[in-house]
Amino acid sequence: MTVEAKGEFTPVDPGFEARVRASFARQAVMGSFGAQLAQVEPGAVAIAWPFRADLTQQHGFLHAGILATMLDSACGYAAYSLMPADAAVLAVEFKINLLAPAQGERFVARARVIRAGRTLTVCEADAFAIQDQGEKRIAHMVGTIMGVRDNPTLAG
Amino acid sequence: MTVEAKGEFTPVDPGFEARVRASFARQAVMGSFGAQLAQVEPGAVAIAWPFRADLTQQHGFLHAGILATMLDSACGYAAYSLMPADAAVLAVEFKINLLAPAQGERFVARARVIRAGRTLTVCEADAFAIQDQGEKRIAHMVGTIMGVRDNPTLAG
Amino acid sequence: MTVEAKGEFTPVDPGFEARVRASFARQAVMGSFGAQLAQVEPGAVAIAWPFRADLTQQHGFLHAGILATMLDSACGYAAYSLMPADAAVLAVEFKINLLAPAQGERFVARARVIRAGRTLTVCEADAFAIQDQGEKRIAHMVGTIMGVRDNPTLAG
Amino acid sequence: MTVEAKGEFTPVDPGFEARVRASFARQAVMGSFGAQLAQVEPGAVAIAWPFRADLTQQHGFLHAGILATMLDSACGYAAYSLMPADAAVLAVEFKINLLAPAQGERFVARARVIRAGRTLTVCEADAFAIQDQGEKRIAHMVGTIMGVRDNPTLAG
Image 1: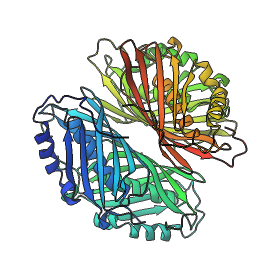
Image 2: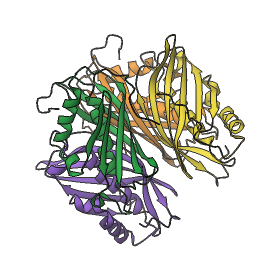
Image 3: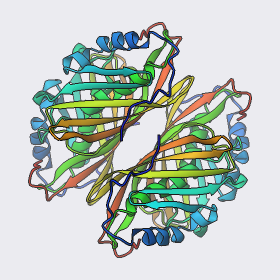
């Protein structure tokens, strides 16, 4: 049930980590939600963030869309870590299954690449609530990410 | 391409609109993002919200997770509008296809029920950027929502 | 609830219909299941097929994978109808919601394009059981299709 | 990348394997396609089947819908293995990502439960082409399965 990539991917850009971190820093929504990059490996990224009462749904749990935000960014950056330095990354589609209520003080989204293609990359990701007794998986995502190399209006 | 339900559903709870509006008001994330319920019909709900620079991804567009937040709430309330008064609503899963960059000053998410079952309801929804020359569809969602009637920890 | 494309797409290849029909004829599985192309319009395709007891699941209904087969081909050809004459078409991903048991003598899958992009096309499709009193929707699909133009091992 | 369940589930019905095998035997489509149950563990099922030229798409690969058929049955039976003896199982929805062409002489679909709930079970599954040099992953599925206990028209 681990989602760590096990060294199966070799990045084409040795500067992948700095590139991922710079792009993450440009995602204003990550700062707004207090999210941090917790791990950047070739083909695997983790994002951690705290509970926020202003981001909840009607039962007081984190809204599923907030989980989707973190899982989608984690998937996008896992894909981006394997792309060439001049690529931009766009989410094509994703699917999320909600497995348990998003209850907890802190959360982590872990994504890994399951197929790295020339144009399209497929990732899977899990969100966990961090609890005293360990982590509880609360959501699962599968997503498709496109690498774009010829669009001057997009950068990183 | 319209997503209006055309009177095909009859709500079992005549007070469905007040019930939807009360639950929406309890979703703290909706207020945080400046979202408003723009339409509540039996089996169809629209949510409108403004662009917010603090909710953007690395290219300055709204993050896909924000679209997912609005589309998921629209789907959930479209399903909830057809449920009995004592039901709570939980998202089971959803899938989103991103069709165009989320650029614009204002946005709307429109959801409608495509199957209302005893336990599970299936909805589809579209997000549009509102522009001078009309609306542009930017995302499409299909989601499954569960009605829960026997869980004392959930209300509305 | 109609899934007809309403003249919103103009095919770049005026020979699109012959091209779709020729590719469909090469899908051996379509002939094996008795399926026929019932409609070919720019951006919209319908496939009809009969019930077959040898394609059922444990309750005697058509297996969901048979619905997926027809819906996926319908989506693929709806996308293919809008592509240039030298393109090949590959399914990237699809999601299907099962709405009712696949009971009936005859079935039809209707697909339409909801976004035609340079590389990726998004389609939605519905499967219906044809009954005395009309059609009953039994499944809904959303799928992503890639057009490939530079792969010599693929044709049509 | 393994999809084996690691003893994390305890079946409520000690006769789960015979029950799964009996239901599989009633899926006419499995026999029609030459499929066999290759593994039945609590929360994990594998189905193996041969290439068949009459089930191909236009490029001569197995049609994606055939992969969906096998992955969906594998998911359904992985879920079913954990259900009580009087339950029936229905597919609610599934999503499949196609990762590589379905080329090969033999294939296997491996599914495992990632969440077993009272009403809904979530599974993931992978399809592999079996090659001289090992297995190649060709498709990934995530699906939701409902257990039904009060429907007299369904059995197993």
